[in-house]
Image (cartoon, rainbow, N blue to C red; front, side, top):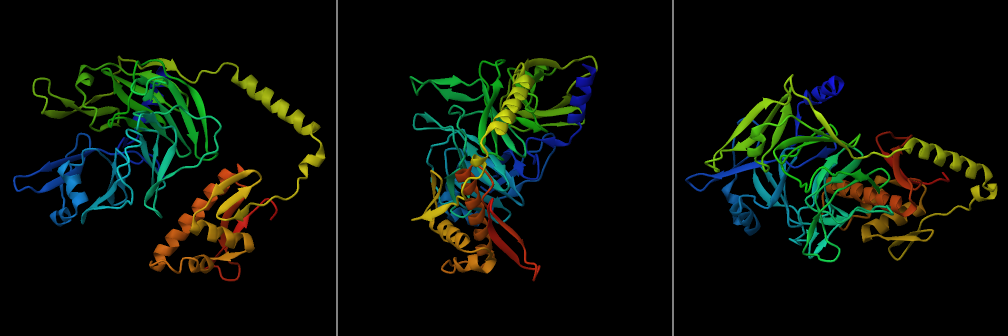
Length: 449
C-alpha cells in the first residue's frame, strides 16, 4: 500500500487539471463562467479551481449577428467550450454549430446546422481538430466518430478499419492518450425499446495508429456512470466524484481506485471544474440551505492515516501471456510452411476511376480536390508544391490559405489510403529537394519504391 501511495502522490504532484492540455496534441473541454451586469454587458471567463480570474467583456458589436445573439441569450448554455490557442471554441451539444470566441468578439466558423444527431457525445480535440464519438439522436445511439473538417467546415465521418465496434454510447466517460481513446460508462439503448436507456458497463479503446476498436473489459462497480464536466484527467488516470466518493480509473492498467471519503464530496457541483495539485484537491461545493451560493473547497487528497483502496481490476485476462506466446508460435509455423510463391505477389497499385479510389476489392470515394491530387500523384514520380497549388487556381484564396488547403487534402488522402490498404504501404510523403533545399518534393510512397 505504501508503494501505491507513493505512485499516487507522484501523480498528484503534476500541475494539471481537467481544463488544461493533457499533451501537445490533446485537450478536453474547459468550464466557463458567464454574467451580465446592470448595463446589459455580457462577460465570460475560464473557471480556474480556487482562483479568481479576470472577466472578459464580449464586444456588443458582434450581437448584430442573429446566430451570435441567440448564443449570448442562452449564456452559452448547450455549448461545450474548448481552449484553442488564443481563442475559445464553443461546440453545440445538439450537433453541428461551432463558434470562435476571442478578444474581438464571437463568430460562427462552421457551415453545419443543429442536426441533433450526436447529443451528449464524447467530445475532444486532437491535433487542433475537434472529434466526437457516439451520441444520441432520432431514437438511435451512435457508435461512430466524426471530426470537424477545416476545409469544408462540416462534421465529417472518421474512417476506421475495425471489424468490431462498441455499442452506441452517449454520456460516456473517457480517457485520452496520444495514441488512443478509452471510453467507459455512459448509456446505451435497449435493443427492443429505443425509449429505454440502459447503463453501459463495457470498456472500449480506439487506436488512432491502426484505427481499430478493441474491448478491454468491464467496470461493474457502478449502477450508472456518466460524464461530468468536473471529470479530471492526470496522466492516464481519470478522477471523478460519484455517489459522494472520489474514484480514480487508471486506463493503462484498467484498475479502479477509491479514495478516502469526505462529507463535502456530497455537495460537489458536477458542472464545475476540479483540480489536484501538490496533494490538495480543489472543487466547488454548493451551500445546502442556499443552493445558489457556492464556494471552493480545498483539502488534502489523502491524509497519512488514510488509505487508497483498490476496488476493481477491469482488464483482468488470465493466461494472456500464454495466449500471446501460442499466437506467435503458430504465426512462426505458418510463415515457415507457407509456399514461397505466395510471398511474390504481383504489384498491385491503387486505381482511380470516376472519383473512386480502388485497391484490390475495396473502394473509397474521393471529392473533386482529392481526385485531382490523386491523379497527379499516380501519373508522376515526383510532385512539386506548385503543381498542387495550380490545381486550386480557381479558388478565391490567398496563397497561405491554399497551402493550408493543400495540407488538408494530402492528410485526407493519406487517411483514405490507410483505410483502403489496411496499412501505411501507400502514403503521400514529402522530402527536401536535393538541388534546392528550400523546396519540398512530394511523392506517392509504395512498397515498390
